[in-house]
Image (cartoon, rainbow, N blue to C red; front, top):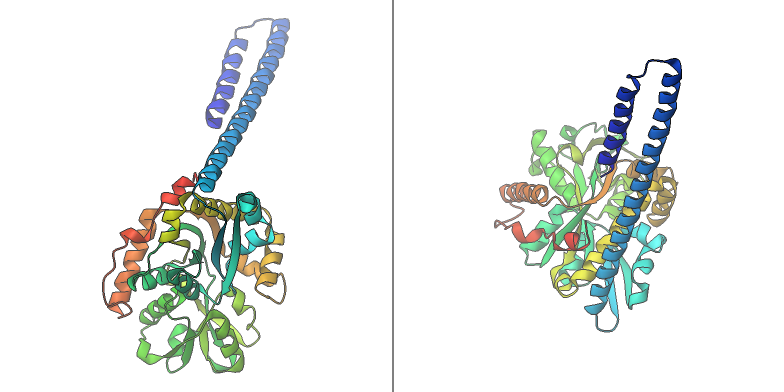
Length: 373
């Protein structure tokens, strides 16, 4: 609509210029110029008013959609409802922002709906809680979605909120002379088994001429890898960039997980909850969208909130993590399914999975659409 209005403005100005060329005297030229400026000003003013009117109408339409979604949400709830959301202790922004800025209260307080955030050490632990019914929503990567779905969990991806770019480094202690993935042969490496980082690390081994038998992989949570690196128990590890900030005095980055595999950060839901409360599920996505919009406009404060929430030494340490995240609430079903399929193929080839898995039920855009996105 705005492009059409601007095109009309330009067309009006061009038309006036052509008419001005028909005059012959200086006075006529002056009058034509004045007329041109008047018409141009009038046309621009009208365009601005039309755009303002369009913004007002868009805002009113959005308010109407919000009111309708809220009313539908209230209708599906009998009494009070407590929503439990799983979050990471060591990374991820959106729920920390929503909690700190009161976005959950703004969305739900008038409707007898309360939200509680439960902290876990990493994505696989969050997904385990969603699968077990301990929380209704979680965040993490595609790999734990596959792992728990293959075990019978009825969960699905309902949105993507960020893609990482060099957010998950492969790190090694500086006193061991390890400068690349190829140098890890014969060393022990701490990884969160079943996570995106685990899958990316196995891919990195293959692309650097190594196998799992060439290294000693042991399973630790993201937070515990920090302790293992600091104590010397682990020679190397795969961590979040935020956690690397805590060990950078004794370890260095030798590569990045994203060099070997795309990192999707997704929101998952317990399907039983979503089917019972579809409109409320859509409203949770609206809170996620509000958090992302806010953090994109408030970088410094967002980093302060994040640094405090994950106990980073300084606010500046949060910058590297923030700046390597491409934030935005989206859901490209075809892309997600394609990456799920390729991950499943890799898992089957490497005996992480023993049976193939249908990706169709793993991504559901019902609630994304219901939220108006």
